[in-house]
Image 1 (cartoon, rainbow, N blue to C red):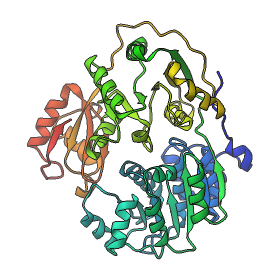
Image 2: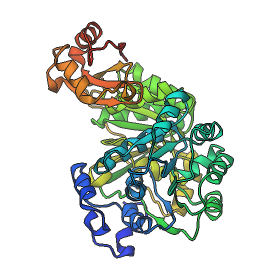
Image 3: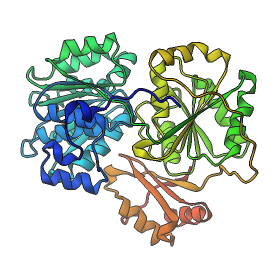
Image 4: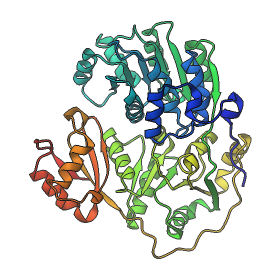
Amino acid sequence: MVMPKEHKGGEETGLPNGFSALALPDPLLRVLSALGYREPTPVQRQAIPPMLAGRDVIARSETGSGKTAAFGIPLLERVDPALSAVQGLVLCPTRDLCNQVITELRSLGRYRPNLRVLGVTGGVPLGPQRQALERGVHIVVATPGRLLDHLARESLRLDALRVLVLDEADRMLDMGFRDAVASVVAATPEQRQTALFSATFDDAVRELSATFQRDPVSVEAAVELHGLRQRVHQVSPARRDDALLAVLAGEQLDPVMVFCNTREETERIAGLLQDHGMAADCLHGGRDQAARDLAVARFRNASTRILVATDVAARGLDIDGIATVINLGLPEQPEFYTHRIGRTGRAGAAGLAISLVGEQDGQALLALERQGVSLPGSVPLPKAAPDVDYGARMQTLLISAGRKDKLRPGDLLGALTGEAGLQADQVGRIEITASRSYVAVNGQVAKRALVRLREGRIKNRRFRVHLV
């Protein structure tokens, strides 16, 4: 099997392995160890040293490559918590990606006492964001449109900014944010440090870099796919649905991400899988933000076993533990193939990428080959196994309260094991956002937990609770 060509960052920089080689302070090294970071990824090895030295960086790096820590670690080091001003700004194309960056920065920033990180995105009221900015914030993670709203209202100043990060710059350009980004940059000090991270280095991204960066260090790093197997099944479009069902029935593959090229196909395939008793949902840009948040939360906590998605909707989502990626046809843009399969087999873990391809994918195959990516030969479809089950393992409780209500995972776990009478091992993943919380519970006790939480209290208050 021929794998995608990889760029070995550590070999080119000459840096030894281990975060201790990157001249990081001991408190940060202890936090990295506590969070499970062992060895820096290629993009971290290459980007952290020049960013710590104050250099601008332009980095090509995909989802799952560790890019948030690659810019987050140097960003945290440049911030002075004693100075009550916005010193770091991360611009992201979507609210989903902003939330992930915020979570990572807060985790990494545990070693900086009194550090304040704020999300400034659409879909939520301006008022609480404005109040938080007035109290003082050190790092802002924002979407361009909402950030411009605050700049126009003078509720945010960037005159003390030290570091600007443009995350997923190619996608921001694809979404039409070029002028918005330019307006934001115009409000920042000329002597700022600028880091640009992008999955592709097309002409538009290079032009953006030439306009807003000074002599940037260029970094190119791919997701390490050492633990990934690839499999190809040759099928005609008319048999693709049956082939997908055969693949899923042939062995236990979950959790699974199935990639489609259109919104309509994601809806149809999710419905097909649901009709066959599988816990499946879809993710595409046509769904509203609340529906996308719920789909991702349910997939993370095993209420959904199969998530059917478009490339655009899945960009920026960092979901650990995906066992299998299935491609229903190949993407038109070859870099999307690597993005897709890079979601499994991470950090040396076993992973499987299955592609259902036909004659209609000929041009896409040629495009992949021009990028140095060769797929293995086609193999027969597996025979169905009657004991394979893709039903929901957990159910999800949606609680109408989150960080703004001072909720913490321990509060919810305490309410479930106290008021609701659950055992700790009957409670799964707890995910808390600004205004909502998602809690996975064992399906056999989900209704009991729902009734008890509705009748009881969480931190001495009542909140709306639903099974979703």
